[in-house]
Length: 315
Image: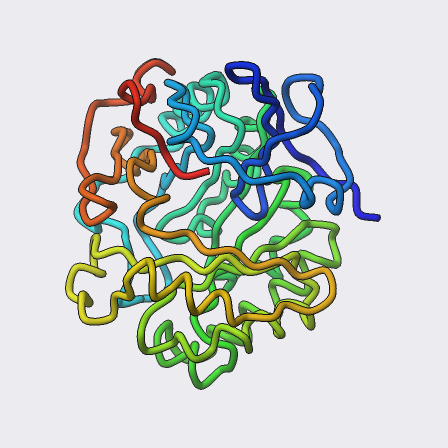
C-alpha cells in the first residue's frame, strides 16, 4: 500500500479527489475533509475519473504556472512562448500566494525548465500552503541534484520523456537528456516523491508507447501520461505530427501497463480551456479545441482565474 498526498473538495454534491502525479481528478464515494489529505493510492485509482467540463465549476480543478521561460534544452514541440518576459523573484512569490488561495486542487510549476529557479522549493511550499497539492514538471536534467530539496516542497514530480531509449528521446530533446532524466526519476523515487512520466504523443514516437510504459515500471514511476501534442508555441510548426484524439485513444487501448503502473491519455478535448499562468504573470487559456492559447488578464486576485460559465479545464 502506498499512501501519498491528494487534495479533495466537494463540488455540487460531488466528492472530488485530485491526484497531483497523474493530473487527474476522481469522484470519491464519500465525503473527505477538504484540502490536502493522505490516501491509499490503489484505493483512489479505483474511483472513476471526472472532468471539469462535466462540473461547470468556476474555479479550475488545476492550474499550470510557468514562471520561467529559460530552458537548457530546445524541444521542437515546446508549448512555451519564448518572447514572454520573466518576472523577478518577489513577483513570483506574490503570484504563488495568489495561486495558493485560488481554491484549485492542483497547482503545477512548469516552464521553461523550473529546476533552473533557485527559489523553486520555496514556491512549491507556498503553493500547497493553501490546502491544495503542488507538483513540478521538468525535463529531469537537474532532478537528481535537487530531488532531496524538492521532496519537502512538492507532492509529485512529472518528468518529460519523449522516447523509451536514449536514441529516440535524445533525437527530440538533445544528447544526454535521456540518461539525465532517468537518473533524476530514480533519485526522486528514492526520496519518496511520486513520479509520473509525461510523453508528448506524436506520429513519430507513437510506436514507443508500450516501451515507455515498461520503462516507467523499471524506473519506479507511478505511471505515464500520454499528452496529445498541441500546435502551440514551437509545436505550431509540427502539425503533421498531430494524431487525432480518436487515433490516440485507439493507440492507448493497445498499451498494457505492468504491475502498479497506470497509463492515461490527455486528449485535446480534455486540454481545451486549460488554465495557464505564464512567466509574464498573465492568465492564459487554451482555446479552439486546444489548437491555440490566448492571454486573458493579469493575475492580480484569485478571481482572475475563474472559468467562464459552462466551460472547463483539464482534470
